[in-house]
Image 1 (tube, rainbow, N blue to C red):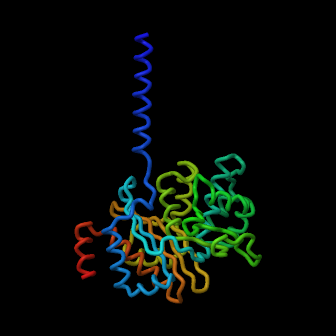
Image 2 (tube, helix red, strand yellow):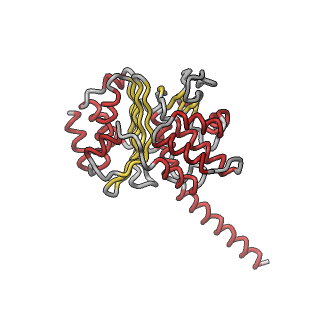
Image 3 (tube, rainbow, N blue to C red):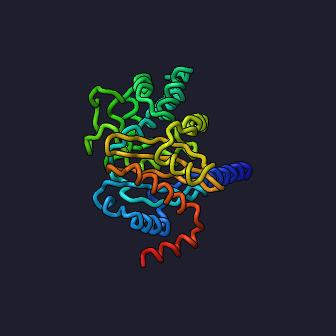
Length: 303
């Protein structure tokens, strides 16, 4: 009897330790990780750049996540849940869906598919995106985005990532239910995608490593990439952008000098590409600046 009690107690202790370990390993939801000082600093910089009106008019959305301490992200954003047309940026959803199907055993990563996925992300090839989407399945992509596991599109939070049209002349097959957008995104949900990617929570660790490798050599040198390469050579950039008429978007995980952050900006303006270049350098500065200095700067700028 006494031995049975001892075994039961040992099992309870082991369970408690496992639960404690799981709790420590859990990553926070980005909505719960807004950093007041970083937010004040971002707001002040947006004012300094003369972009406050664009924010008020909902023509600009941006999310910054400092993931230098991956377990304790610091978030700042403006219009984070405003869904906008994002052109080629939602091609990242095809990438995710492909690796999810590969993991589940319903798709093989042969050389042809890998080539299409790489060209789709690095060079934003529409032809490769069409081919990859046909292979993966358009209904599968939308189901995955709205799944309980990922909830990258949430109707009660303003939307999110959406891909309801192939990248060609054919019409949309399913526009998003909230805004009637074919290729859409919110900066917050794109940032969530990258945070899940950085923490090996998209599919599994092996898939995340493969996706990071594909995203890690941008083939287009504009917007975020052009600005960072000019101002801060040596930055590591995992990136996907989009452009169509006045719509400009860019998104990336950026790492340099021991610090790492997620930057996402969506804009609807003739000068949108310039805004993106200015904002990524601003975000870079906010992450690279020590918090105490950042606080002092933000207070001076708002006085």
